[in-house]
Length: 249
View 1 (cartoon, one colour):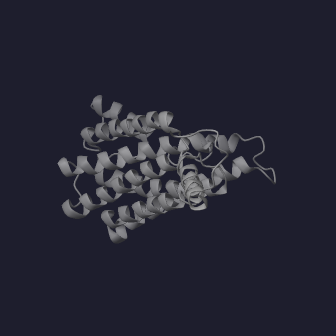
View 2: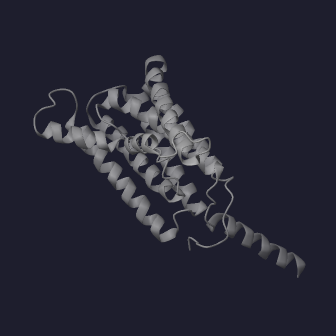
């Protein structure tokens, strides 16, 4: 009888661990900042290699309009821009809608989606390593599709973490929100500190990506980006869970 009760309790604990919603605390902030750093690296690689952004879809939207109007010349590849924008939206849509069903902060779901995102980043790095740096072609479109889908899924999967100051991708609103904060010069201001850290880490990731591209090549630098995503995936195993207010079942 006692072993049976022990097994039941053990299964219940595992179920609660996997299906319970994650608590939003300092570890979530660390994970968001790691993803932000990876995003900076990724866009610093995608723009010089593919003449489009993998994460910054504001830039892609403007570039797409400029290109369709015939004003871009040879500055960018419209096909690359279109694929990036489309795959980012697709990744966001699928990730967000599935999360609405299973629970947006469910550990099992977050582990699965971040494992997929990480695999896609490693896949893009493999494509770059095998086929080299090109401006166009099927291999380029494949790498862009993987990176952009992964980026869209990343943003959508972390939005429910209630950290609007750390979006992991978009910087424009963060810059504005930082400088107009009425408590900008206050001694203690957690929202300001999060925004400032987000922007600093994004800039740092961008520099790391740019100099990594020059020093070790884009494929190896993308591996660094994917390694950052891997670390976040592993850290999700350590997040504490909230009381079971929502379940992915």
